[in-house]
Every structure is written in C-alpha cells, then in structure tokens.
Amino acid sequence: MAQDFPSLKKELQHKMDSTLDVVKKEFAGLRTGRASAALLDPVQVEAYGALTPLNQVASVSVPEPRMISVSVWDKGLAKSVEKAIREANLGLNPMSDGSLIRVPIPPLTAERRTELTKIAHKYAEQARVAVRNVRRDGNEALKKMEKDHKISQDEHKRFHDEVQKMTDQMVGKIDDALKHKEQEITQV
Image (tube, rainbow, N blue to C red):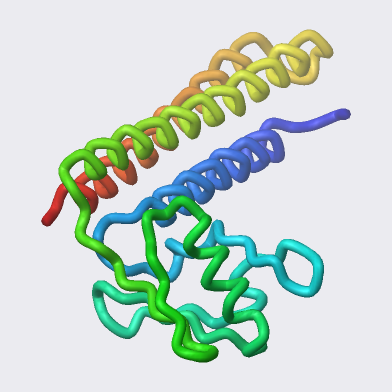
C-alpha cells in the first residue's frame, strides 16, 4: 500500500468528518422538548414481515413546535407504526387518527434533562475516542512510511504534527456540538 501523505491526510480527514456527522445525528435523536423529525429516525416498524425504518413507510413532519405528524402511506400499517413509536423507548405516546398519527412532545422533567445531558456526554466521548483511533491509525501509517523510506524523519515529525492538529480541531468541533446540545436540552 504505497501511500503519500496528502492522500493519507485526506483519508484521515474524511474519517474524522464522518465521526462528527455520526455524533451530530446521535445528538439530533436526543429529545429536547421540541419536536424534530429526526427524533423518530431510530424507529423500526414491523411492515410486510420485516422491520423497516419508519421513514420508508410514512412521511414525518413537524406542524408545530411540540407535535410530530406521521402520515402513513399504507393505512393497514397505521397500528404497527403507532406501536413501533410507543415501544421505541422515546417517552412518546402517539395518537392515531386513521392514517395520520399525531405524536405530542411532552415537556421534559428535570431528571430527564440530566439524563439526556449524560447521554450526550457519552456520545461525545465515544466520538472523541473514534477520532483518536483515526489519529493512531494515521500515526502508524506515518511510521510505516518512514520505515519504508518513503518519507524522512523530519517529514514524519511535521506530518505527525499535522495529524495532531487535525485531531485537536475535530475534538474541538465535537465539544462545540456537545455544548450546543447541552444548551438545547437545558433550555425550558
């Protein structure tokens, strides 16, 4: 695997960006007291004999700040969708009206806010660890490149510093996303 530093750097940056995208999606799934279509992303519906993501059997919209509306395409699946939302452990209680399901978003309690903040911290730490693992892989690739005489010792040191800088920037972005999510959770 003959690889030069620019392509290695690009690959590392892509992996780190993917990690940031994942943690942002996880944050979007945390309920903050305001309705969000992303809140129902993890819901899997028993449809046609298989578990199917909710967004493949219905359209999800947010008509008002504390209400999610789920419009089921096949009326026969309405009960399954309602059951899947109720059993997804999101603390939501859907109400069916034919093929339209309304999901009111209850206000958050102080304990639930604390719990959500802890979960957000856990997600952020997992993302930081993933970024550090990408850094480790990059540094190992640099060592191999130096050992194979593809780069000099000075280049190894300089590239190593660049990888560390990328890591620090990405951890900073994760921390900013966490801070934003904490503010969102704690606002009444």
